[in-house]
Image (cartoon, rainbow, N blue to C red; front, side):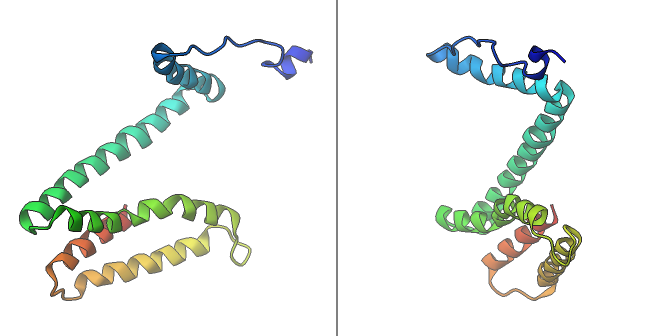
Length: 152
């Protein structure tokens, strides 16, 4: 095997990055091109579709409806609504940490099955809250949205 085949980027000089506004506009496109050269364009497109469009669109639409419900139906102040929205977003904040934990710390020699069982038990507990009578109007918003966010 030739030395250039082992280390294709070694010895090749890349152009110096452009500075200024044009450099800021062009650099993300160069990065995506470099990424698609390494991984394949279909993988990069799949990641963009799943994470960028799908999750962004779903979270955006659900946030609009939740804000409308909190503001117009429940008559919450913006600060109160933001507190409840922060509580609703807890599962998405914990998701990367949960992924790292399940990938690195085995329980009883198994990597993911005990965590699935634990998550199922947590979900069952939160779903059972839906059947508990709720006398505080604002708590019902949090309870419904927390169950929705944990299910997705």
